[in-house]
Length: 312
Image (cartoon, rainbow, N blue to C red; front, side, top):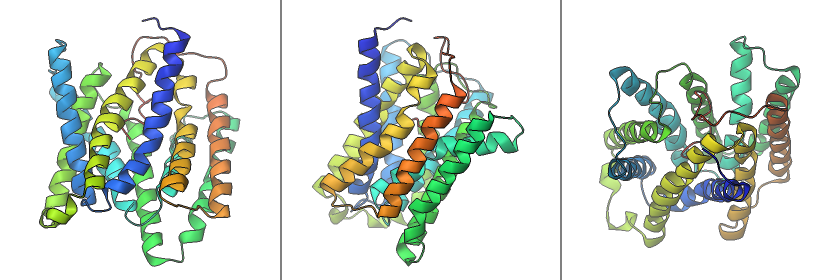
């Protein structure tokens, strides 16, 4: 598949802005909507819409049992525990802080690769260590406050789950078509989130006050723009653009989230958090340069293990 430079950069802009804005959207959605139900219903609806689109295009949605198991595991790690917990964390912390923490995911994966004896380049390992120090600067100011500290802990759990899901996905049998895989991953992640929400009693919170205009509009935005359009652009980029260019969203998305939080939510990250953000973004940039100095990935489809950052 060939694509013009203009189309590639247009798709990159979509991923930069839409995925960066999802943290802002989540913050608005969970102001009144129960967080787990908001996340679960978001993925169930987005997965169903994507399935309908694929069916209308004649794409087969049939997968094997092993592929179904693989997508269920990835959906649970990336969406149920990953993105789902972001919804919970943002009831207690700023959206910009949440985005900065998620920005460390590539660095966490490097640590996991090192532990797994995959021997990343020395520069890659040093960038991961530096980035995690930056993460410490981000979370340190809120450790003394009860509600904020709990939100930071949940956010760290979410980012770690996303990192684990990204790391193990290349070891699982998944559908070759990334769109088909996304249907089942969103379905599984949304189902697990919804069942967990109902088990924890979030269903009783769905009174009239929960469906405020702003929260409902933010939820719709997350379904359509965060999941459907954003992911479609990302999946297309994985087919036609060098992976070293595609993964630049990992250090652009937090910048978008910080800007939106400061402009519309009156968020004011502490000087330590802003310094930590710069350290994290710089470390991710160095890691990407070290991992992909000259190589470009053949345009033959999504390789396993390149799922970090999908469907945020």
